[in-house]
Image 1 (spheres, rainbow, N blue to C red):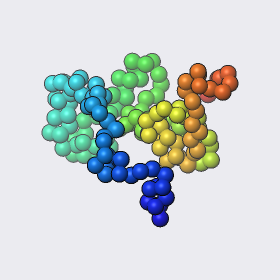
Image 2: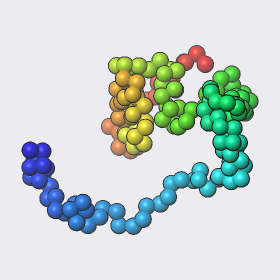
Image 3: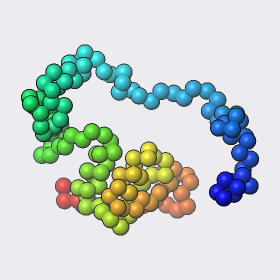
Image 4: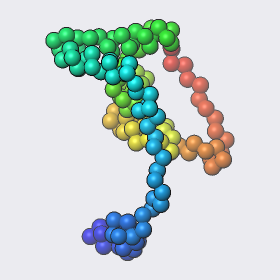
Length: 152
């Protein structure tokens, strides 16, 4: 049923999946700059954990304390009382939202041009993402930002 509706809306034989022309006509730029910064120091850090058979933060036969050391270095560098190492930017977004008290039913303004984790972190917490245009030239009115005191 849905394909019948879609066929009426668009001519599917022109899609690349149906042997039509590809929408991407040239190779996309690589967007992995961090991969170019991996060197012997990072290799040794990984091997130290692997040789200890303790790739987990809280358990293993010979814990290395890598995350604890990282968090302490971050606290020292930024001059802050707390730092929490997470495994991804998505995890960091979720931790940040929870720390701000965001939860089920709350609305969170997110940019319309974003990576999927921006919205998925909000949805995972039961909150509602509200897309916002980030180009001030395309906004319908003047943008005014709220000044919030988070007690930090």
